[in-house]
Image 1 (cartoon, rainbow, N blue to C red):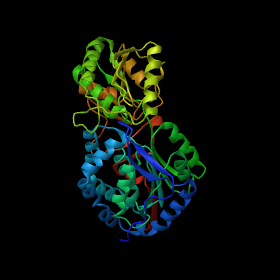
Image 2: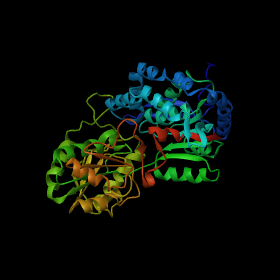
Image 3: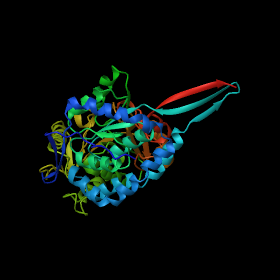
Image 4: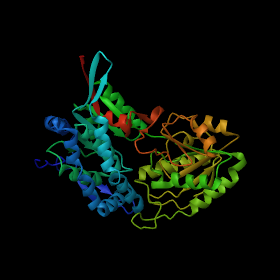
Length: 462
């Protein structure tokens, strides 16, 4: 292969990555001027035909060494993830495991999904080809700074597209290192990186790309969809959520409360499928809250680089302020703090348990993306389902209870993914999919991989 060109356009303006734990500078990248973005896209488009002409097997073979490259740098990547966005080092290692552990299977699954499909109805034979769109824009968030670029970039590349990656300005260094590893395996200009803030993202969306893949807030997703509409560009959007946990009277209360603590506070609540609303019958509310408070008090808070730390800082002061404002507003409207009323400092928000939460409070309706568990007591499961569905979001949901009973309740929830006595993640091959305003299109699975392609049907008479 030809050696890759520079993944980032260089100029005198730089973007500094700041460690949210102590404010130190992790590193800097060069900002791509907004008026240079169309040229970056054009360079990717010129490079794409040769990459798209390769067979699926050849593209898989070209990308296969990436898993070993990341594994060989696992410690460095883990520390960099923690330093850039604050998550505990063990969670950073878990993010790397999620990239590396399933990589070979992911490549094979994409080859299977995108291989030509034959149809024959007796009079006509058709072949369905899954061809590249040409240039795909991937715009990724900061909360999983390695995994999210990986989720979007690899299916796009395997489909034969050239990719222009615009990572979050909060975590540019991890994404740049990831792109550098990939660019060592790819022809020149097949993967380009655009660094910057909103202006660069808007310029990329407005450029002559064919497909826009975005993971981030609902508000930004709406803007992207509107901007893409004028050119009828294809979009794949994974957006925010307000995931509910429904606890049934026949649930294991201790297990449900422990899950609520883990899923509300993991990565300081900065996970798209964090539990943000907990519906508990009045009959078991007291023991549930007691166990949730106990579990919250066991969480070790501190520098993410310490192995014992289970909760690090929020990614920045703006996100911290949003969470604290929601807590204060809820308390002002009658919510009570069962745990976490003191100790917030710097970019740290202490794990917080709120009770007496009602649906007229902002914290029950607007995404928090912080370490807050809101407990809402209900009369029965019908009220719990009604309130859980009383949201514009619908990414994930969880039900705890006797498995058969909980499964019946799960089918009544308006979410793309529902876990029964577990998190929302499905079996290998299941899609990662949102409902309502939490998603437009989806990832993984045979059909998810095909969304990075243009189906083309060639038919002839027998």
